[in-house]
Image 1 (cartoon, helix red, strand yellow):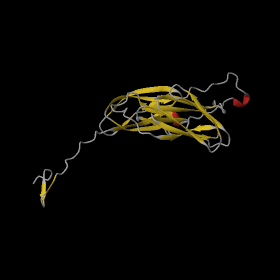
Image 2 (cartoon, one colour; image 1 turned 180 degrees about the vertical axis):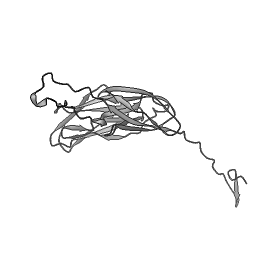
Image 3 (cartoon, one colour; image 1 turned 90 degrees about the vertical axis):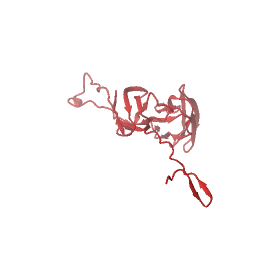
Image 4 (cartoon, helix red, strand yellow; image 1 turned 180 degrees about the horizontal axis):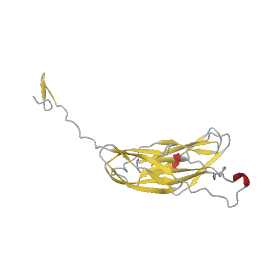
Length: 221
């Protein structure tokens, strides 16, 4: 008896729905971004106390890289859903220093310090000036164009941050170990790019299959 055609009982006819179309299988990209610093500068005439000592090197913050598909998959530019993100102002620092979002996202800028702040940007992708506001207050900006937005504080010149606005969702910010993961990638060949400290500093070609994960490390200098 064919169960999926017709069921007749008590004068009632019911159709058993056939299985819907299978969803397209997707893969994932993951890996690590290695940040290489230039050799530390060695003083030509070091002090007596520094003889034999290794040159000091600044610590590396591995959470400042953004990995993304430079050649986006088909249907990647569908109408994005409105989202909300946050950049805090804490200890006269923007936290996080690097934020990656999709078009249409609204970013809140709360002031968690005990002093005034004035968040602004002169970037072409999104320019704004939120004016001065006190501790405990927050203001917001909606980003409606793709691009890189550099953020500053008009009161504290040492404060700065980056907001990367994408027209698709295939990107990830590296974690404290420099690792990233981009899920839901349709099968195909892509160019994977690594942005760090203001510009794209590494690229590599990758191919995603119908299932499983692709390991792709990058090195930026």
